[in-house]
Length: 360
Image 1 (cartoon, rainbow, N blue to C red):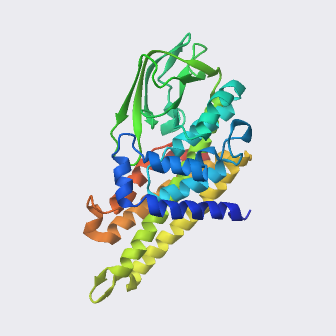
Image 2 (image 1 turned 45 degrees about the horizontal axis):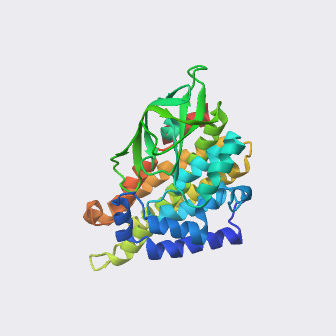
Image 3 (image 1 turned 45 degrees about the vertical axis):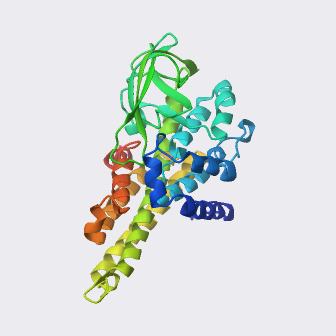
């Protein structure tokens, strides 16, 4: 199967790249990461109002654009390239979980808010990989327990929580929780990658609205979409590392000539290019398979989760090595690529876990 972006998707990527080049430079990225919300609210509103990024995967009957998760992954790749903090990953996973829940009432109530740009998040132990024991439990209509890390959990305006029900240890329901509900404490979790906002939620008898009693199918969808989306971010981050390294190799002079003219460094940058292009190919294949619900979606998502995670780790390491001492300073963006690589490698399963899924 040959995969290529359509003209509309190419235009979408180009528009995002140009906009982010103007609004998400290095200083803006750092300022957004250090802000109270952990992202640039003005940029997010601009992306939602002018490009409609939050509405891309939301059906038209819920005020969305009626496209798919694939178009959103195209946007995520550009966000990954810019390194800009964004609520899009968390919002996409939450909206796809809602759609897969089969709850017409919850979708009608919440998806128009998501499409309009409200930040949504799913509090679920599976954020760090499949098979985790759900720490939140339900008693009647109230939730208790502690769950983390949760993407943008402390600033989310639409909050979904997965919780164990009384039907057994493997029985998990999905609930809507008011972010301002009594008994809910949301605490930002310090992270190595300051551009990735995480939080811990403590629930003490928090009143919740049931979305679906058996959320296994919805959470399986959340894991597939999350894995493919993280792969898209990883491809963008790897492209950023490659671009930075090539540009630096043309400028940095040693022994009277640019270091990019040395054959050994050319070979290393060529290897980085191979990693980026192969990662992009598998990430696109996984995003497309997940968006259309093909039979091999789980296999391709696991392949992308494994390959793209390792690819970004290797590209980030080479980015630091080939920039030399400046790359380990706070002032240079190479450290942002390195930290992003390690942080994304923990979301929705580590590379070795995805490989175990493929082998199983």
